[in-house]
Length: 473
Image (tube, rainbow, N blue to C red; front, top):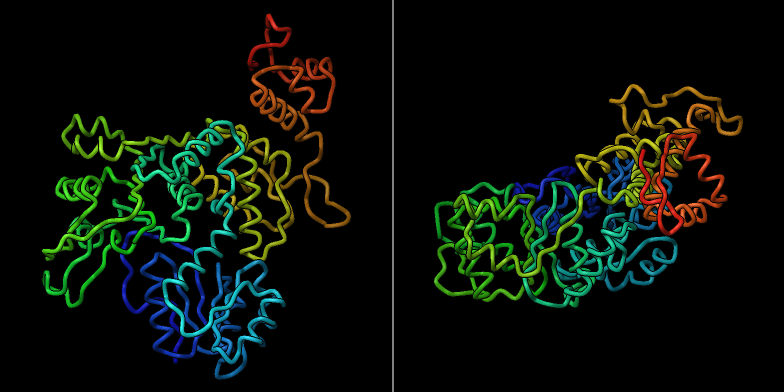
C-alpha cells in the first residue's frame, strides 16, 4: 500500500489550514475512510500503512497528532511508539486496538501514550477524541482556560461564560486576526454543548456556487454531479455549535436561507422538499461593519437583527497589551515542541520590542512572527532581530557568548534602558498610572521608580490622590 500524503478526494474549502493528523493503518478501507473524514473536518491527514514507513517519515515530519494501529504488518504499535517517542516530543498519540489487545493498549497509555480506541468505533467518537487532544495541546484552545490576561479579554470571557448556555445567537466582531473563532470555540467548550460537534465554516472561502450545498447539504440527483446525498454543515453540527465566520460575505440569496435557519430553526437541503430541524447554537462572526452594509443594501436588515442578539466585540491586540507576552510565550513553547527545537525563551530586547509593536495583524501576526522566529533560531533565545527581521534598528546577533551554552546573548548595556522603559510603561498601564501600585509590582521604592521614569523619559503629572495620572512619554 503506497503512502498517502493527501486525501484522495479534495476537501471542501471551508478551512484552509488545519492541524496535521498522521494515521498509521494497514487496512486500506479503514485508512481511506479516516483520511476522508479528517479532510472533511478541516485536518491535514497523512497516511502510512506500515511501521517502517511511519518511522522513516517521522524523521523529517512532526504531526500535531499521531493515530496508530497496534497491529501492523512489520512491527507492533508498541515497537513504533518506543522508537518514535524521542522524536514525537509532546505530540499526542492515540492507539487503535482490537478487543484482544486492550491490555497492550493500557500498557502503552501508562508508558506515555494519550489514549486508545477499541475497534470497531464510531468515526464521530474518533473525531471527538482527536479534537479534544488537539485542543488540550494548543495554546489558543482548551476548555476552561482563560481567554487572556488583560482586563478587556477578562470582560469578554465573563460575558461569554454568562451566555454560554443561552441559545440566543452570538455575533462576534473585531478586526481580522483578533481571535473571533477562538472566542466561538471557548463559548462552545464552556457550555453544555461541549461534548457535541463544533462546526466552523468560513463563508468567504467557499465559492458562491457551492456555499448553498456546503452549508445546507443536497439530495442525491439535486444537480449534475450530485451522485450521493450530502449532509451540510448545519446538519453535521447536530446539537452542537454552528460557527459562521465572515458571515458578511454570504450572497443575498443565501442570507434569506440563513434567516429562515436562525428564525424558524429549519432548513432544506438543495433539491429537498422536507424541512430539517436545526438544533445547533449559531455563532456568527465578521470583521465588516454590518450596519454600513445594511445601509448599502449588501446585507439584509432583518438578518442583521436576528444574528445580533448578543454582540461580542473582541478588542485588537494593541488595546490589550497585557496579552502580548503570555501569547508569545505560549506559542513559543508550542512551536518549540512541534519543531523539536531547543528554544527556551525570548531575550529582554525581544520582549520589549514586542510590547512596543503596534500588531496591525493582531494575534494572527503574533503567531506568524513567533513561528518563523522559532523555526530560524539557532540557539535557545529568540532575539528581537528574529521576531522583527524587517526592523534594522533592533538588537541583532551581537553580544557575549554564554560560556555554558555558547549562545549569543546581548550585552546588558545594549538592552537595559529599552527593557526598563518598556517594562515600566507596561506596568504603569496595568496600574492605571498609579506610582505606588506600580512600584509595588516592580519591587522597588516609589522614589526609585520616579527617578527611573525621569531618566528614561517617562513623565507623569500630579494627582489629587497623591499618585500621578496615566503616564505620558
